[in-house]
Length: 50
Image (cartoon, rainbow, N blue to C red):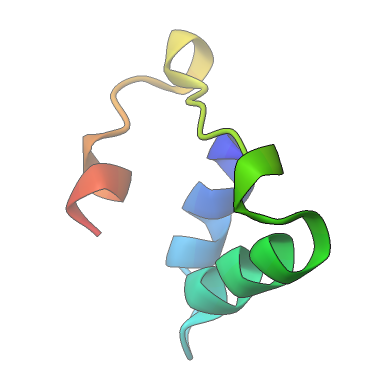
């Protein structure tokens, strides 16, 4: 979900919030794992700040 979440942060109208809500509704909070793609894309600090 790392790269996908980063892309949704750049979109207007709370796209990242909608994305997270859809994941929670579909899979439940116990089945979602936060990960980063920092090995390929660098520091995820901008996502943490957002």
